Image (cartoon, rainbow, N blue to C red; front, side, top):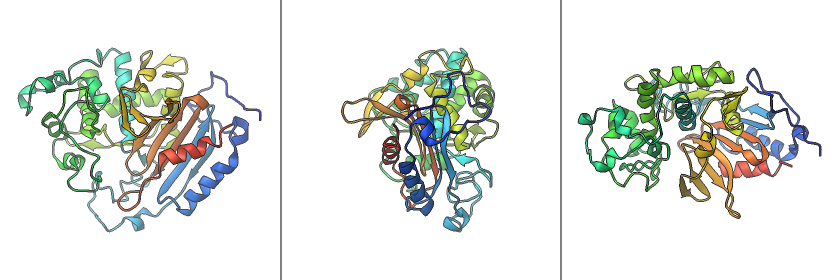
Amino acid sequence: MTVHRFPLDHWPTARWPCAAPSEVGIEAAPILALDAEFARGDHGFVDGLTIIRHGAIVFDRSYPHDYATAYGGRDTTLSPYNYLHPAWHPYYHGTDLHTLQSVTKSVTAVLVGMALARHELPTLDVPLLQYFDTTAIDHLDDRKQRITLRHLLTMSAGLDWDELSVPYEDPTNVCQHMEQSADWVGFTLNRPMAYEPGTVFAYNSGLSHLLSPILLHATGSPVDAYAATHLFQPLGITDFHWKRAPGDLPDTQSGLYLRRTDLAKIGYLYLRDGWWEGHGLVPEGWVQASTRPAMPHVRPHTDYGYHWWLLTDEAPRRTAAWAAFGYGGQYLLLVPEVAVILVVTGWNIAEYPDVDPYVTLHRILRAVR
């Protein structure tokens, strides 16, 4: 099989080129089988699948659903954090901009790298509390004062926070408590410490949201405006929505809406080591550092980097994919070894389980030649 590779000076800023699967070394039959399952609803509410290899789209399809019927009437409160209201989820007010949920965290990590490259942030080892009024923070002890930006990115700040042991729909979930509070920043900063920073992985959406005021303080711009100028514009991303949390701060833990093909551009930026059209948008070595296991074995066959999940093979143990995951079935999967980008969006919440990204990835990779 002859595999066509687009030249390295090709960039999908204006649009992605398209190629037949066979042109880029992908067998079509396994992809079409997965497509048929998604179209039939075998995996619940999958909204779209995009597959890119060697810089070209080889598959891109949307699967429409009537969300007003599926989830309508359960909660009619018109709120950006009512996950059952079709005006906000999964699409933004009838557009094709899809909620990314916690994939937002990985995009925010890109912005942290950009702020370092632009010398707006000095280092990841700067103390977190340098950006906040410590006189207003509860449970202030030596451990809390040792938290750094690196600990935020690696989910190892040491705060007392358990977000994953109960479903997000459960009213006892700490993330729900944060989202229902009037001050997400204060809610997070005021949590007591449970561990020495840097020693224990504890997934914490509040830590991701702290990056919103930190980047505002460091750059002078709200995160959505900063992203629009320094990330989205160079990549040719013209349409997006970024929800605002209390305090009018862009929600950097789950607030971003994008099209699948635009999210794939952010993945392509990482596959190209942070370069775009001859310009390094993040510091040299940032992509490697972001996708290196900072916190190993956080899940079976999964490590954690700088707001990126690192999926590994069993033997030999190596990074098989870099992943950004979001509630409801959003994921961006990057496989550097075979130059594959996979984007899936959906809205499997409540009684509907997410599509397993590991299974989906392995099915796609079996088609790669």
